[in-house]
Length: 274
Image (cartoon, rainbow, N blue to C red):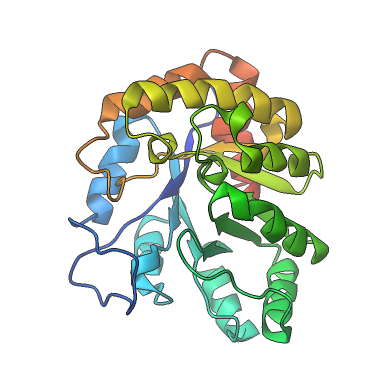
């Protein structure tokens, strides 16, 4: 997959090994290793010049494996970390030097944190000071409250996986419609990734991908959208093939300006590749 521009950025992926310490109370345990060498091969196979690693929820707050991967591949990779609200500024600055550009709130099936507490407010102030973003992974019916609280802190907000709507027809999902409304704020970014998490059926995932993008472009603008492979497709490893991703990349490549913004310009600026 080639873009006749500067490059292609995969904005969402994970690397890990099964022998790493796993977080207690994790939502699931991965089925197989996802080593850095395999991810780099995945990037090369799809013509991707850069990638963004996301701390997996099952590794908790220990970001060390991801940091090692970034260090081995500079300047090809960046990272988004998971941190506790009590984290100190020196600790965040060390992450920043290690290629981290944001923090992730993964509450897909967990308890929503009270972002109004002093500890969270202090953390969000630090995120803003570092010019990072907050990445939110939750189901669409919880999005609006999360976004409203985060925007009050004037931080940049990135929404994972189309906002995780529950309906394959975006026009029917109330949470997705709220995401479109919030998108007009100019402070929201959205990842075009993980459509198969809405429906594991390839045809349905492609249909959602094709129907959601025009709505997102209209309401957020292509300068607020990014594509991500979601490699290694945890919990869907057997269903997702390289052809699945290539089909969706080809949809984006039909429009040169859209391609440039979504695959390069937007993520390059947000994740500080340029």
